[in-house]
Amino acid sequence: MNVFGWKIGGALLIAYTLVAGFIVPVPQLPILGESIRNLFFHVPMWFGMTVLLLLSALNSVRQLATGKLQHDALAAAQVRIALWYGAAGLLTGMVWARTTWGTWWVNDPKLLGAAAGILFYVAYLVLRGAMDDPDRRARVAAVANIIFFCMFIPTIFIIPRLTDSLHPGSGGNPAFNVYDLDNRMRWVFYPAVVGWILLGVWLAALSARLQLIDQAATFSQSNNEKKQPA
Amino acid sequence: MNRFMKLMPCSGRIAFLLVTTDRLAAQTLDQQAADYLMRNDRLNAVIIVLLIIFAALIILLIRQEIKIRQLQKKINDNHE
Image (cartoon, rainbow over the protein chains, first blue to last red):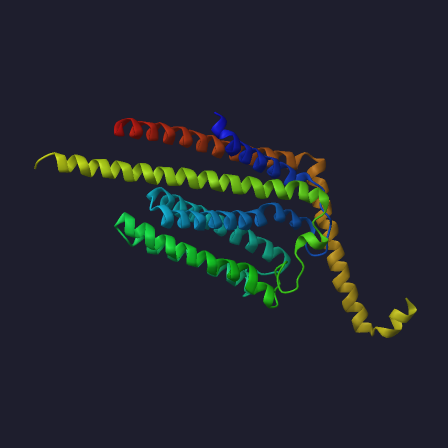
């Protein structure tokens, strides 16, 4: 049961932030108002996505170094869960943008970068799904994953800082923690980030293990068919 | 204040008042809504519903985890 520790811990952290996120006092700022509570739910999605993609890139490096298929399965599962986090981050961001900027979407470098970053990884999954040979698929997907991660970081974190942007933390526009994220909010925000990251790692591990079981079942089925004469 | 009134034309004053009162009213409404929800225990109901849904999802995940472990154990036993 001790293996469950960090998984249950992550779930408890999220449960805590679901409660505290609604009741903790927040600074009443112009335009933002109570919508600043979105910080507890929107930003952890992107943090979780970035950490999962980093872990996925590291698993791809391990796959290339060792040639073991389980690293490829884990890398792909982490990308899949990261994409779900990215979709949730985009949707929660759109709702927040509607409340504060008055529109669901603006062609802002940060938003376009996030959309482009998600598309890189959709391309990774399409590329990986297009190959049948497991060894070749693992090697090609690992190289693509490392390249996409190297493209993802500048697209989402560096380029928006170099130009004008509406999004906090970009283009000279201060991030929340400079002025607004007071200490009461930190007590909710950091547990939320850790909790969502742990949940993402758990979900990805479950997905990868299911994929490996499926591969093992297919392998043993084909072996049985070879053994039995027609 | 007099200097401010002299410097700003009448239309500017009206625009300034419209913008600031709108923002102030919005903030007051936000705060009133939050206070109302807290005072009447309405927010507690929302939080409890959220927690129930989240707990159900986590229980589902734990069940999946246990099932996957059993399957992995079976596969390992078959290999041995």
